[in-house]
Length: 112
Image (cartoon, rainbow, N blue to C red; front, side):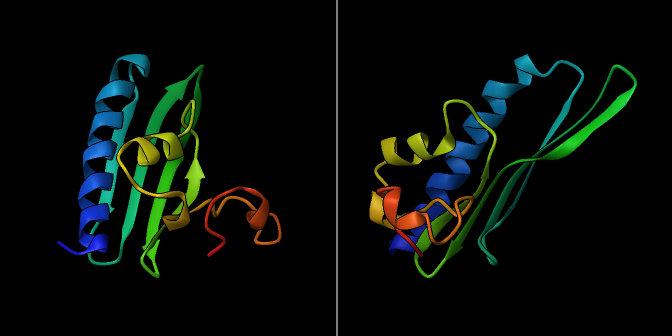
């Protein structure tokens, strides 16, 4: 299995585990996964009404580009990047894309 195929499989497994973990904490919320292996896009979305206000958005978004995982948005606590590391993905294959490119060399992760 090549590296990218392996990463896609790991991301799918971790997203499904995250979904199960968050369900009890978001009562009344609809949590959805949008995963596309062909384009390398993986999103976790939430949709709820809280105090008569709509609460909707993407709180976790990963992309696979150039044989690396780009963490585009991470609204999880303590951070989804830790899950990627625990799953055996090396820091040099993870880009913290929510940081400006000028700051990425200081993160200890891949720059692009």
